[in-house]
Length: 328
Image (cartoon, rainbow, N blue to C red; front, side, top):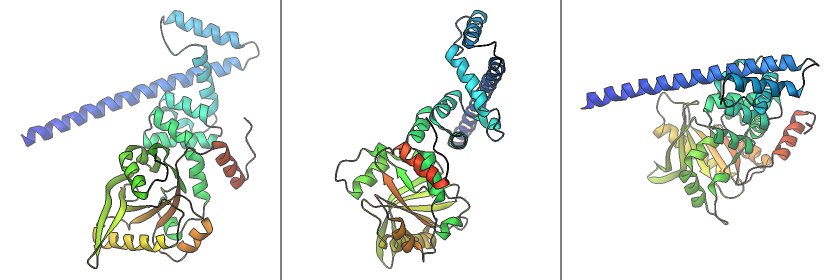
């Protein structure tokens, strides 16, 4: 029976992989078609003799050639033209465009203002395989701005030495719908009950292991709020939740947890454990003082219970990078 089950699972995997490959190929050909149509329209409309009526007539001719065909009306054709013109001169992005679907392309073109932001979300879609709803949520939560602002923060030396830093300076957990005057237990329970959305926020390389993960030292039991494994870093990630402002003593406690994890839980082929302390707020100067002497890879981040104001974050990023303000 076990042999038959193993064989069935292998066959199911082959079928699923083949279906996924077919869908990827169909999407690739679809995007290529839109690109070529957009290119042709862009070249023709660049001529002074062609105007808006030209697009209307093209749409009508397509309907005559393919009665009942959808997705080739005036608005759609303009989107194809915009698609080509947006990426045709971008040597970094144009090779990537066939790797995400058309719906996500439309969301990115509508929601992003700069080439850097568009490239960021295209790469994120490829890496995380976002659905329409997931991509919209990331753009609405200003994931790009928060990521870029996090990169510009002074990171602790142990975190700088990581091959990659998957941590943000702030996380948005608006999906928890917590009650007023909530407790740390409410925060933890909310995250566990909404783990799919939480993984979307922190990144899909995070794999949840357990809540209140118990470690024993000197005959006493200690509990880590949430324990994850990060596939990219190949290490355990201890997550501690705090409902108030960051306090320096949180660092020594996390040091203790990471040492215990490395001595008792970490496997030989894994990297040293990493800590993330998630607080309601923090003072960067207090964080810097608190982290200056620790050798543990650890990040202090804030959580927000509401979607951030995109304009405010954009201004902060522009000021930080000394970029001119973008006109609407």
